[in-house]
Picture 1 (cartoon, rainbow, N blue to C red):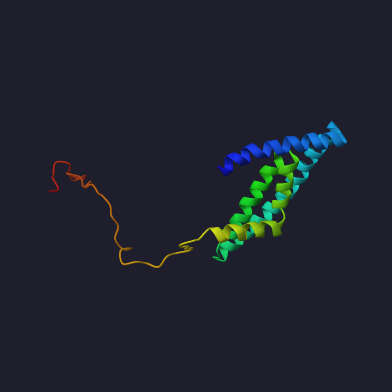
Picture 2 (picture 1 turned 30 degrees about the horizontal axis):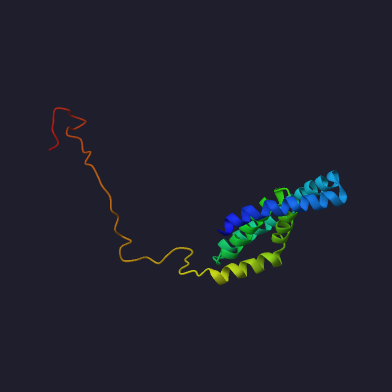
Length: 154
């Protein structure tokens, strides 16, 4: 239900903002602002995305919990999609998600609602059944001696 309301409300908000801003400053300045925010957003997205990937690699190499760097990366990706979507409302949300304090706040809100039952990283300790390998085989022993084809091996 919430997703349906978002898909309904966001375009209506964008249309209303386009009409208001376009009425105040005109068509071409409005379009220029939309294109400029996409260009600036793409530049910021590259920098933030590279930093997020670096943090994610560091958490993996240190065997730390990668949930926060992964969440920040996902929010940066979502911010990029919002910034490339034409509109003032989506640009505002996208630029907000590119700010680390906003992303940390969103992550804290999500963390309060999500409960991780189990997290494991790295090699697990061996169990009693780790030395058992289940497999199937087929006997491919030749019936005849390769040196003397007339002699049987069995």
